[in-house]
Image (cartoon, rainbow, N blue to C red; front, side):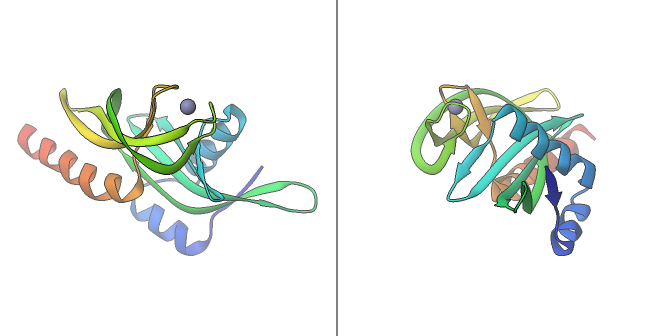
Length: 152
Ligand SMILES: [Zn+2]
């Protein structure tokens, strides 16, 4: 599958330290494993690459011969996601792997050997979780910076 990344998106994700090859890797892996969230034509996939979890937000567009992915955004976090703590609110996301609605809740997040509960979209059936862009780039990034400062 072709993965198209518009220039303005490439600029944003470049600043976030995410490589084009990683974006393609995340999309291809999600599409072949059928493991992603979807909502109104949007897809959210993630993959752990090295120490970071990389997410890609994309749409699938049908061409004459084949589908391609249009990348809307990509982001990452360094915290590693552990067990689901709770699932409290409905979301518009569907977990494609099991077909169940995904919920907003909390997940145990570990970084530099410290574990705290953080907000995530969770599938209780698959025991999988995803962090949305505003939380990863704001809340988690701030927490990661704080942990690093404490360690230094
Ligand atoms: Zn699921």
